[in-house]
Length: 163
Image (cartoon, rainbow, N blue to C red; front, side, top):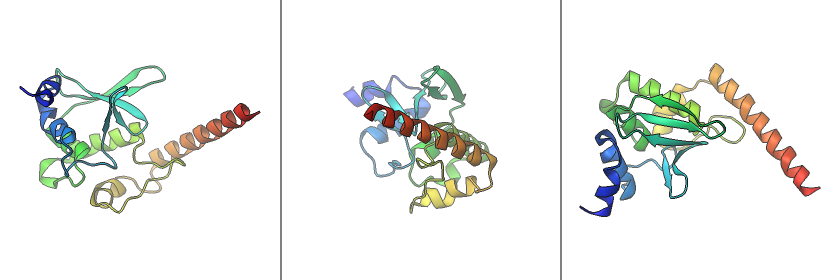
């Protein structure tokens, strides 16, 4: 067995296909809204570390501040949405799409630094992400306010460091 195969064996079989495609840099992999692997921190999605549970395939979102975990039941459809730049609608269902929205909200990968929906010219953004988030969506407002507060805090901290 090669090194890629040994690495993939540390994950639940439901995730093998997607992690392997990520590792071999397959063109299907989403480089904008998908996860990336950092050799020090592990898997990262937006502002959060994530992991893939070896026992059941759950996608685990880890909040660094208090190590609180949020689990989303891993399904082939959810992995398909997470990893692929142009997911095939025949590969996921409405439940997968709602879990994907939860994943986006909790990792904030769909937001820019001001908490606004991060646009893209990609098909995934126009077909999936943008329709999931309407400008009046309460969750977007909540995240925009939180992101604005974080930005103000970072600016204040940076200014104090200069003094």
